[in-house]
Length: 236
Image (cartoon, rainbow, N blue to C red; front, side, top):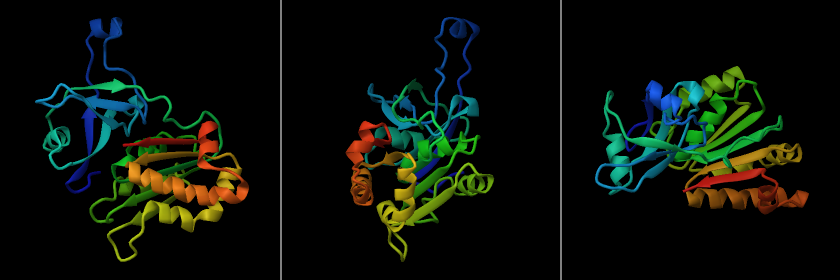
């Protein structure tokens, strides 16, 4: 599944390690959705990090990339064609994970922030209750994983999918979708749900404001949920 430029889902084969590399632990690290892929672009020694949308068991390395004006790494990645390669490495991100329990999960993201959230949904083979709220500009150009989301909703890996588009007649953002679903979100949180948020900092701030209003009647705050490990952000 791909989305029109200036953004795309990129999928790479997992590098094959030699017998010596595997024996000495120097092969490509095992990884999970939510870990980070460091890419070192041509012309710079500084790596850029992208949240992984796949796990090692999926058999591929997948990221969502948006082209940034003047962006060295994003431009090089989006100019790749099938058969090209990129230099990369794994950085663990153990704090951005679904909790090891059976409580519901609320996934909230916008734009390329859906990457690791899609990875969590793909890995939800035990059909844990998982709800996705996703914001994008327009369904014709920015609906990452559109077909997969429908499949995961149909097979139970996602209990619900709620979208918000900012450049359509409705003109809504993901935080608006949260406010419109206040009753269900409040109920899920009362049942111990974990919230994972991924995307831009402005989006994350808007989501935090919306959740603060949703949580207030129960005497809760985003800060309290964060302290309990039930509210985790990956904002950039």
